[in-house]
Image 1 (cartoon, rainbow, N blue to C red):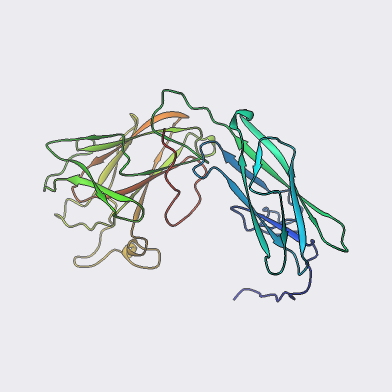
Image 2 (image 1 turned 90 degrees about the vertical axis):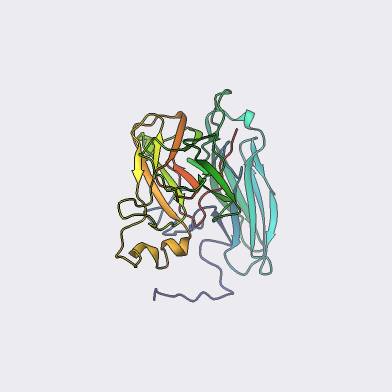
Length: 332
């Protein structure tokens, strides 16, 4: 068991009456906190980032109490394009936290990447004002007017499998949508069911158009994860369940995603707290290299007939872990 420290409910923390906690961090400012930065002390002010194709369109900062005292707060910025959901409020023992959303009131005022300075000021009786700084960095990405498809936001592209650009039929078999299926919206599977299979790249396919502004660490790498239903190998021994993925004209990658198991048994990945059944999903990552920012086409091919696609997630450098994955990206 980790070390537990009891905090007296009527004692104020040394850092002051107010703490701010930006979205996506366990750190709290002011004061030293090992979650603020790798060094754990003398960390810079927190930075919150946003771009114009982010699905949510905002970020938040929580304002909390550093002790039992009631205080009022105000928020100011040096940039006219910053929009606050509120610029003042009160934190008290009965209302110990306040959430403030940040957004851009007019993206036409932003060129490229710009940073605004934010100041949170707390006032309470008998103490000097406490001012805490934060930074709000926003990026305005420019998309070609002729592009149609999914657009990267916050260095991630998320696509529900049902929202394909095109659906190619081969020998009367195509991909059909199973509504209200899976973890989010639906599933997509080859139909009608048949015993036939295809070599990678020859079978029915669904295509997805997307536009990326970044790659992972500017390396030219993208990780494309296809989330599929945990389908067992229910065919012949030499035909394990499989599908294939291709990005633009790069080499096709084939995935036999269900691990081998003893006859009548299950693979180790089937059970457990983080297994196929617990997650109701199998995440199949594919690494593509030499990718440049711009418009791209992703194809997913049928190899065996019992695959069910649910979601496709493209990590352009900003993917963070979550159970359901990021919400679907903006589609233009």
